[in-house]
Amino acid sequence: MTKTNKPRLRFFEESPGQRHVEAHDRYLYSRPAAQHKVNVIGTGTIGMEHMRVAALLGRVGINGIYDPQPASVATALDEYAKLSEETPTVYSSVEEACNASEADALMICTPNYTHIDVFEVASQSGKPIFLEKPMATTLDDAKRIVEISKNYPGFIQVGLQYRYKAPYVEARYEALDRGTLGNIHMLNMSEYRPPFLDKVGQWNKFNDESGGTLVEKCCHYFDLLASFAGGRPRRVYASCGRAVNFTDFAREGVASDIDDHAFVIIDFDNNVRANFTLNMFAPTFHEELIISGDRGRLIANERFDFQNEDVARSEVVVELGEEGASRRTDIGYARPIEHSGHHGSTYMEHIAFADQLEGKTVDAATPAQGLWSIVIAVAAQESARSGQPIDVQSLIDTHGLETVIQA
Ligand SMILES: NC(=O)c1ccc[n+]([C@@H]2O[C@H](COP(=O)([O-])OP(=O)(O)OC[C@H]3O[C@@H](n4cnc5c(N)ncnc54)[C@H](O)[C@@H]3O)[C@@H](O)[C@H]2O)c1
Image (tube, rainbow, N blue to C red; front, side, top):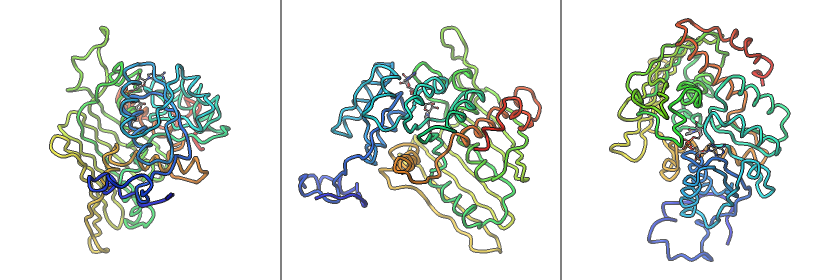
């Protein structure tokens, strides 16, 4: 008995009352063999999330892994063994993992400052590449990645998966596809969250290894704001600081220098104005996007009180005043998907990755879009440093980005 499509009905599949159903009787719960094989390079927090999500989705199998830290390899194999009967090959170098003929595609999940070097090796393989966000820590490295991607035989997908969070998918449908709000004029986005988590080597505590807080974390939000604004960012103003987090943290005598709060304003060339607020010393997670148009307003938010709840609560509110019907909608993915990582957005990102492997067109982030998210972040960090607004075109000209940014 084989089944190639939905529904999976995982709730029943995993319930004690269904465990007696043997393999030959499994139809709804049968797992089709993965059609594609990927090698994961870097098996820390997000590398393991990709392995977990790949196992859950079942379309892309994990052929092999490479990570220089033995604890990362051991933990990843351990976790994956709970989800799959296949044991990934452990490679001994980036080169070996990238060029292994058994893998159809590569996932780069290493620290930000290593992306450029790993990508240079990976791109010699000609295989489709998934590259975690931020695609690089500097504009020059990001430019190089876009340049390579232009004539690359495979696709390159950047891990800006917040675009797949359920409230933003719905917001996009209402505001952009249906045009419910009329012409969009203002965007407000905020993220309140606890500090950056511990990492291997603590690379996220240092600006030169992470690219800075606004590059490392907030590229997700700049990607979202750019997609809702629909124009090109023209001017960026920002104020950032470090108030609470890691003020006493040092690695081998070098003090952490990352920001933990920020205000950013972005003027787009189509007169859309956006702002972004970051606070990284909040007790729980809360992010919100407010889109204001000339017909109404949309509020999309996601709250995750991990102290008390095990699933995020998200809603989308559409307010049209006297212009039309207003509503408030709870929104979210099915529980196993919500639980698999980043509230289901990584799972949706994997669907896009598998679809691209099958030649389908998807709305996943391209290298050029990944570059735009870094342009805004770098402009904001420069504005905060200098106390001056940053003219985005000057930044583009200084770094010679014009030819690559239009892709
Ligand atoms: N899309 C998202 O929402 C999201 C979430 C978390 C992290 N990330 C990104 O994923 C990347 C990894 O972050 P993380 O949280 O997993 O960090 P981590 O420190 O938990 O894991 C990184 C792993 O990469 C390994 N590594 C270091 N150099 C390597 C190399 N040259 N080759 C192979 N492996 C190497 C480390 O040993 C470690 O195991 C970063 O770019 C980060 O910004 C994205």
